[in-house]
Image (cartoon, rainbow, N blue to C red; front, side, top):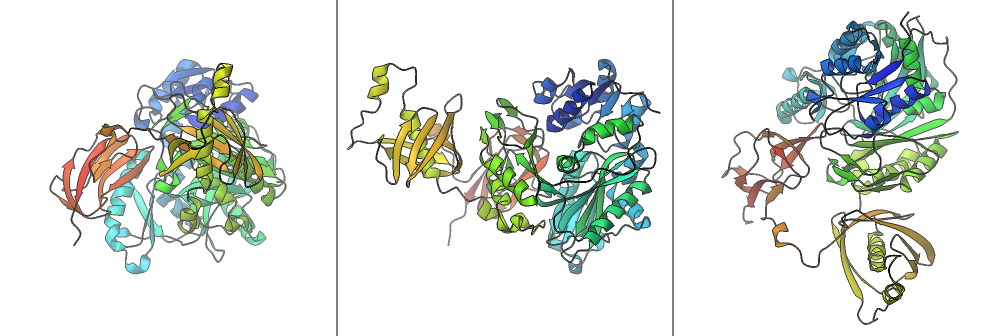
Length: 637
C-alpha cells in the first residue's frame, strides 16, 4: 500500500502544471512548481505554494534534467511527482529514479513505460497481444510501391520527428531531419517508417487502470484535425463509429494495457482507414493534452484518479456512463497562413467568454518565449449533442479577445463552422484541403481600419471639454487620413466623424466605437498596446490587429532586395552543406534551419540566383528580423 500523498511537485510547466495544481488544491495537497529562468514569473509558478528554480533556459538544461527535478522535490518537502505530459513524462529511468528517491510516482510502472517507450518495440508487443498493426517499412529497402511513407520518432510523440515522404529522392534528407528533431525533443534520434494512410482518422481510447486488476476504457476521442501531425481539435466520443468498431477499439486498448500490466492513466492511439479498419499506432503512457474532453463526457477528474491510484486505491469495477459530447480546441500563438510560424512576444489580453472550460498557462501581460510549445490555451465545450458543443465552442472563440500575438483563433472558428466538420467528415487531410480558404484575410478589415482611425481621433475622456468638442471640427473637404497594415495588407482610411459609404457613425470613444454598417448597428471594442504600435479591434464581425503606418518611414527599416530575415527568434541548427557566398541557389531550396519552440523551421531561397552574403552560422542565436543571408536574383531571360 502506497503512503498517502501530502505535497505534490509537478515536473512540468504551462497549462498542464496549472491544471494539475488546481486538482491538487481541491484535494488539499501542497503544491511545488519547478521553473526555468524564462519561466520565473510564469502562471504555473504563481499558482503553486512553492517553486524551485532550474537554472537555464533550454529544456535540456531545465525541465529534462530529472536529477534537478528530484532534488527540487526533496528540498521542497514534496512526497510525490506528477510529470504532466511531454518532457520526462514517458521516461522510464526518471520514473525509476523518482521511486528510488522515496517519492511517489504519479504514473504507470517504469516497466510499462519502458515497454511502450519505443514505438518499434511497442508494436512487437501489440502484435503478440493480437492488436492489429500496420507493417513497418525498412527505409533502406523502400521502393516506390511503399510510398507514401510516414517517418516517426521512436521515443516520443506530439508530431516531433515526423515527416511524410512521397518521393524516394527525398527520403534521405527526411530521415536526417526527422532524426535531428527527435534527438532534440526526446534525446533519442531513432526513427522508423510505416505506410502513410491518406485520409485516415486518428481515433484513441482513454484508459485508466489500478493495481488491483481493473482497467477502464473511457470511450473514444477523435483527434483527426492536425497540423504538422499535431492535434488541433479533439472531441469525445469519436463521432460516427459503428458500435462494433467502437467495441473492438475498447477491447484492443484494454488488451494493450493488460499486456504491460499498466497502472494509471494512458491512451491507446489508432489509425482508422476510410473503410473502417483500425491499426494500432502507439500507447502514450501519460495523461494526454486532450484529456479534458473525456473528463467532461464522463464527469471525472482524471488527475484526481491518477493520484488516488498512485496511493493504492481501487477503482470501481465499471466506470460511470458517458453523457453528451465535448469538443476541445488548442489555441496556439502561431500564424497558420505562414506555414504555422510560431509567434513570440507579450500576450496583452487573453479573455475567452462563455460557458466553456479554459485550461491555460498564461494571463494578460505574460510573455510567450521561444523555448517552449506555442500553445496558449485549451478551450473545451460540453453539451448534450455534438452540434451544440461545436456551436458553443465556436461562439466562445469568436468572441474571445486575444491581443498581442497572431494566433490560430480564426482558423479554429472556421474549422468548427466548416461543413465537413459539422457533418463529422473527419480525416487527417482536412487542413491539406482547406487551409488556404480558412486563412483568407477577413473581408471587413477595412471597416476595422476605419474604427481604429475614429477611435484614435477621439479625445481622451479626461481631456478638457473644449478639446472633446473641438476634436470633431473636421472640414468636410479635408478629411483626416490614417494608414494601417493588417495581415500584410495596407489600408488607407480617409474619414470624417460622420457620413462614410455604407457606414453611419453613431458614437465614438477611445475604446468603443458604434457604427451602423449597411443598416445594422454594431459595436467595436478598441484597445492599443502600451507603446501604441498595434491597435486591436474586436466585434461580432471578427478580430483584427492593425499596425499604424508611420507618416515618414524610417529609412533604416529598408532592407536589401533578396534579404532573408529571421522570421522568429531561434537557434540556427544547420546550414545547407557547401553553402557559402557565391553559391548558386534555386527558388525554394532550403538554405538554413532554425529551431524555435521545439520545432525546426526551414529558411528557403526566395528566388533562383547567387548567395551574396551569409551571416548565419550553426549554433547561433538570432533575434526576430536578424539578417541571415542575401540572395541576388538572377536576371529573367
